Image (cartoon, rainbow, N blue to C red; front, side):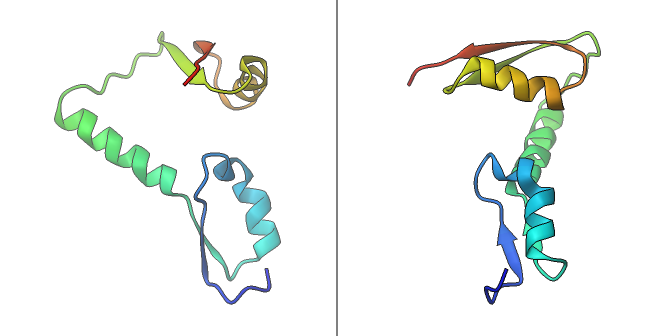
Length: 92
């Protein structure tokens, strides 16, 4: 908060989940940038340009995690809508 900055980039996949808390701590004069948001906009544009963007309300989505599937399920219940999804663990 006392750093001499005007902008803070949320450079980790987990930071956007904490954006509200980080904003409250840093105060109104620090601009927060979420690069994931722009990445999603770019992906949406590419999918549209290639006629690959399909929005289906009856969709089933798959999520993959290198961490605990049980922890991911807790997060998913908190942030995802009621559509159907599966969560699988992957090992690199």
